Length: 164
Image 1 (cartoon, rainbow, N blue to C red):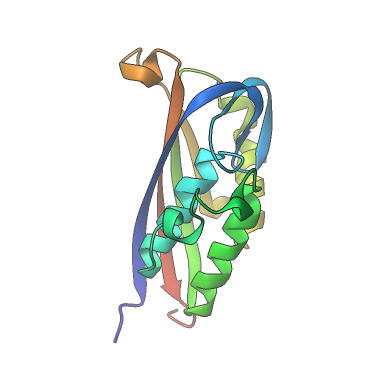
Image 2 (cartoon, rainbow, N blue to C red):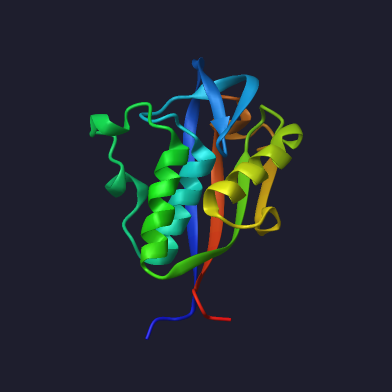
């Protein structure tokens, strides 16, 4: 029998693209350059999706939503997350909590954290208190420190319905 709890780790990174709006955690961040990607390039939701798939033992985001498939061109990552949540729930899992860290020199995340947490909680069907989103800089190191892009790390805890 499978364990009643599972954890998953997710990661995503994108370079900035000033011709696009920036979306993080399903929230548009005004005045900041967007991210280059096949979909809307919401790196935060992509990292959460990969963490969900990993915890559930499913293939990664690229296997589910390949960038070679035109269906996902400019797709809203909130819709991709809805698909991921449905797949995880179909396997009997419930989201316990999410912990995510956005690593970027810019934009400053603090003014947007409450809205992002609320949006992610809504998309996952959990309480805001079950979602943590933190912003960190890379102290000027590498491409992130040079303000060429950002990356996100996410961890998810899943539990079997009825495990408590």
